[in-house]
Image 1 (tube, rainbow, N blue to C red):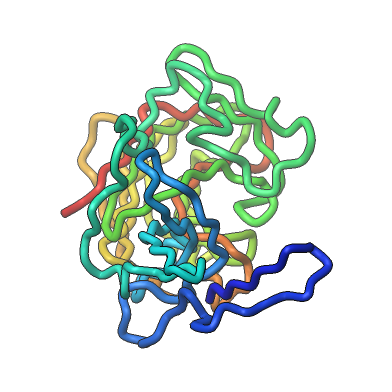
Image 2: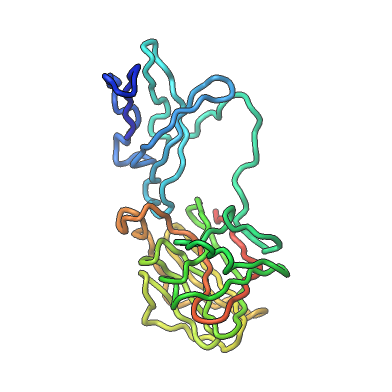
Length: 286
């Protein structure tokens, strides 16, 4: 929730807003839950807004998302939140100039995008040197034994349904793959080492092994359709093969794992050598 107090001195005495909390979730059926940590900002035309975060009801996996709510100041100088449960669209702030909306998560690796599109999980100092871009490929030096200790490269999402895919080429004994990654204890996805496919669910390797052809190149795809996840692979130029087991991932979120993160696509390389990633594509689904 959001509460407000005011004072003429940082040392007090403090006066609490008479209608605290200013912002909170009033009904568990509301669209947005756990609303809090607000900052009040003045818009270009002098209108006021609260910027804060909350969880989307039924989609905790998307993590804490940024919300914008109009604020009205009363004659006594206290703020009132005017957006109700934010289930309906609001008029955008007045004035100013509109900027670009969102960003494309697909990546042809024609240039570096670490820190803007991609980020390492638990990145150690100097870890950025593991990733190099050239020839429309991202080359990622292998690290660790699997998704749990290799610091995957992740990117954020905000869609209820989406698919992502990437082409992978292995060198010098690496294992590489495509994941939906929450943290080093909770993830799912697949890895290919040139001889076998390893499926991950619940943060560990699955007992079920998908049959796969031997080689050094493979295409991988994950479809997250409103928290029902399907995985696919194909040899380059071949047909997509859907994996036999689907996963339900609505429990992959902060309220079960205690980390303030989200379930997000990731690519990784573990073991020895390195992996080349090409033509990463992300598409929101209707």
